[in-house]
Image 1 (cartoon, rainbow, N blue to C red):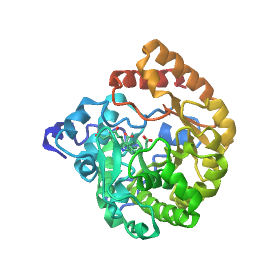
Image 2: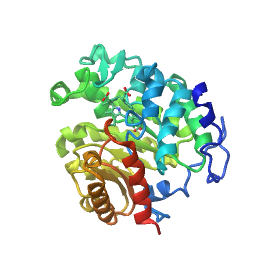
Image 3: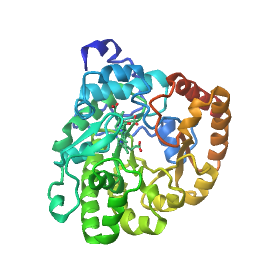
Image 4: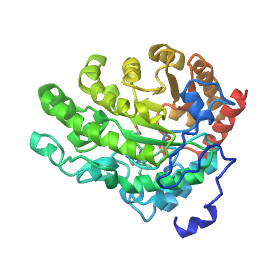
Length: 372
Ligand code: CP3
């Protein structure tokens, strides 16, 4: 841990032990089944509706901006001391019901040999995009050893978090492929879709490789002690349901099914996925993440009674003043009651300009409204 944060370290977050076994190197890890978050993921009642926020760690927090002043994004992701500190920051501040590992979806593909950078204000940029069968060779399989820094960070965090569950995550094959093929962020996914339609064999070979990398990355996190995983297919909403089912779902399903025996809830999230919610559940999710466009009662019907939902306050609502935030949070909670389980979240990540105090207040509001 960096020295200047030493005063915030050991024990500062440890709560009444909720885990039945101590977590340490090579010891079996315990999913925090009794936590409100894991219970909601399993469709079980709990003391209140759990809440966490996608991108809760990051630029909305001054303490994050300070720690990142001197260190690049990818380097930060590879330093277990920084990952631990940054992951804990929103837990200390907001009293959220879960922590999410600080990392990025491109960390495992960098470990797989792809030359890339995460550019502030832009996102991942790939030096030489992957567009041919020959390019595929640059994307080699990974082993746990290639991402040992992530396992180390998870072990440090699980020890520090006590009864608060840690969510591990990865990017789904489609969303990762879009960065590899486009070379960076895209609005239209033109090159991605062109490969998908014109060269299906190459497409499936690429997504198959990405699925293997993703599964290794997630298994590493599960073995190190995360209590749940989220598969981010952020940009899958660019596809029709038919194309999603043919070109994408088999690969996401191989990741999610590969984790079926791991004992941790699997959350599957994308943006603009109204027509995909059913398929994203069928791919092997326990919880389907929903953006703000689809009311949760509608989403709950689409994913069926065997799956919980997560979401879905529009992150822009946090800029509309507290009265609007409260009204909309109450609506989301009311609509979420139609689901077998509801994890309160935003419909996408926290915007960097968000006032963090609104997030703290929102957590307290959700807990207060839903206290049982
Ligand atoms: O708190 C958390 O949610 C955990 C951290 C997290 C990050 N990236 C940190 C990050 C998570 C879960 C991600 C996932 C991720 N990364 C996704 C899926 C989630 C989503 O938002 O849909 C995607 C598409 C990426 C790719 C990526 N990386 C983007 C689009 C960006 C933002 C670019 C920018 O600067 O606006 C990044 C960089 C990134 N990842 C930042 C953070 C905190 C900002 C980097 C910085 O602080 O300079």
